[in-house]
Length: 188
Image 1: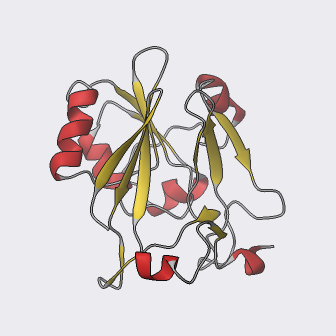
Image 2: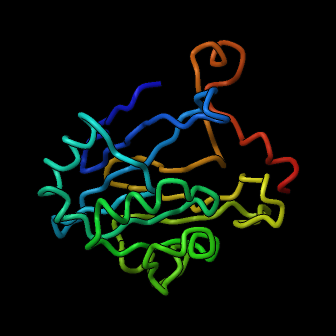
């Protein structure tokens, strides 16, 4: 799974990248870039941009200066937050209470990403959480909860882990194209 940027139209780009468990098994990761009605941009989730994908993002966003905010919607995805804060120092960083505890070097907004204040700030998106699943589960191994972000203009849904697709073509032959996170049963 190589790093790629997919233009889904109407100001929505999904960026797919590598994330290796134990440095070996690539299960992939993602973030999304959205152009707001104001002409500014926001990211959904953090990812360390490199190579051609980074060049494309920088070209779209006036060398990153037009990135207004990064909304980290998955409370357990914290690995790339510090790098994203270095890459986009002018951006407002929204996260959960867990983000602030795990990555204290980032200057997090007092408004939590799942708050009404953030939802009202970005009317281009519709946010929701799965009912019956803890957003931040007490068991650090259960990652089924996430804040889902729907972009009506492009008809695109950004979600990490709550719903997922197999990380490799090999697994895609034996698993469904879209499935619930493997920890969902424990999360309920």
